[in-house]
Image (cartoon, rainbow, N blue to C red; front, side):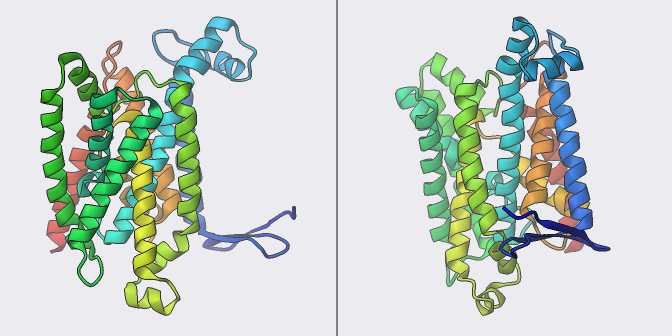
Length: 352
């Protein structure tokens, strides 16, 4: 395999293979922001591995990760804490990319799976599986994916009129989301007390009790879908120029939009199946990434990196804010996201 050439221009980083079969371009500022935010996310992950009721020095964390610590320390770090930390990073990446997809499709900063209703639809599908059969990870994941896809299909068909328009997609999605939220509450009220409490806690969005049996399949699913999404990143950027311009560049706009919609739902469903519906990460990550990188449009990689940082920071806050009581991470993201949403709405109102 040929070694790639990496060149830094005054504003652009270009990576190109010797044979010319691979080429990637990224603004230097975007590269720097991604590197800094990634480093910050891993620093938070290290803090999460080291702190808790059983404090572990940093040197012992490293020894545990390399298999050289004592049995107790290794168990605490690698079996109890590492799956949760890994899921915070991976699911944050998944939600960040999902938010970037929907905000690009709708061309609206409010275009997020939790606003449009796909998050709620995935929760409905997972909730039906939990209440009906209890459900293994794969059953819940299948229910979440099916619920998200069916919701996406309904929203897409209701919003479609000579092509899907972003604003109409958001309005229809908000209406469907409200209906599904009411249905979810009704389902929980009809369940027995123990099942209802389990479903309600899970529905708040929580990484508590995550194990390797949940983490490994989730990482696999997110990795596959994320790679497929990155393969469509260029076409996604072209769609932001408008359907006519995209068609002129050889992009089938509605087909590409539908593929991106399916991938975005799959990323949302993967996160929902593991941790329940975690709100506002998908909404905030793409906009924060765009402002940090000063990009004109929504980009996938910065959104994914910022999403990982936001969920890692939120989960660490959820664990330590009222220790030893651990809050569901969704409580923290909703609190932060509510403040962000008020600011975003006020900003959009000033523009208009």
